[in-house]
Length: 90
Image (cartoon, rainbow, N blue to C red):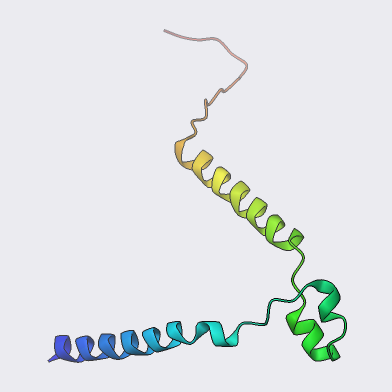
């Protein structure tokens, strides 16, 4: 019974996803050059103006450094060196 309900739920979500995926281009803003967006009303100008690439580049750099740090913590090895006053007794 649970498998049947789960399968029906999965089919429903798959159907909704296919419909949303087929409609995704209708919600995109028109491809405008920055000088073309200046003549639109203020709200449309803000919505349709292309985003500067600097935030995207910054995001990719931060994610890359985080991934490098994560990989370094997984695969890196640290030598533990302890110093103390005293003598070694064999």
